[in-house]
Image (cartoon, rainbow, N blue to C red; front, side, top):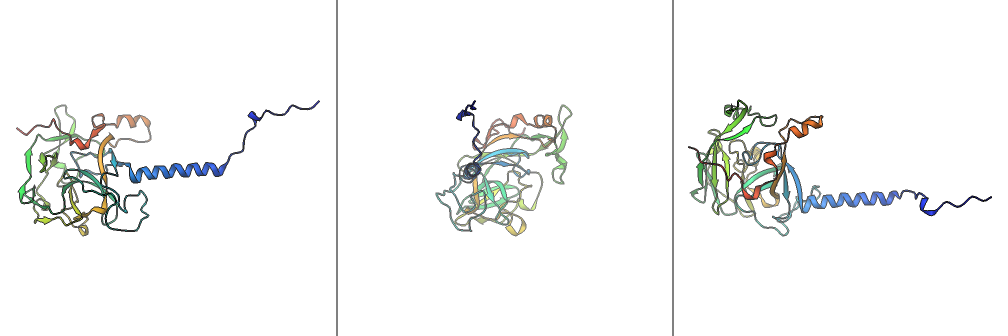
Length: 285
């Protein structure tokens, strides 16, 4: 009695490892292409952009609005070269991710001035092209104290207090700044600092001038590169434009998955950064 042949449908085909590796390679290539030329996630590690961006915010940054340079790929594999492909200048008020000229580390700052603009700080107030930028004192900006926002640095500690419910908060003096053209946003002015007064600086061709919204806690274009600042930033160092906050964590997460939920800040989900936000803020007094 002969044994019936096994149906073809039940025969397990051997794994084609070459095909599997090729598919994985294509997947990695697609992810790198999206990160390099379309958009990428970004994490806020410092308070230099308070109150607009909090430590622990997660953002989406689009890569294409300003075109592409040798620094656009996620892997720094291209040789240094001037200019941008399909490039255009950012607008004053854009929040931009850039590469530091010193070590190519990612920074996030606000675009303040463009080529040909004259920038100066006078007693903590911004002047552009010889005229003061509109600046209005607002109600203090309050942030709950959390593991990544503890107000314990030498410049922040004086602003640590409690709210009406007895909860510890950071309560900062805030100002609304409105650039020529109407872009408006909140800034913090915490103390008298050397960077509150600067000489007039003209932005050279092919460069931009950026500052953090937390004016006394930001190493930006007011500082030369040799002093750990950004200086006048070459346009090649633009990476992309911050579009919106996806979610935010207060720094209290650990190995326990339950802490992942408790660390979420629901009020900071899906904030459109291009809309400039904070529309409900009221003037002081």
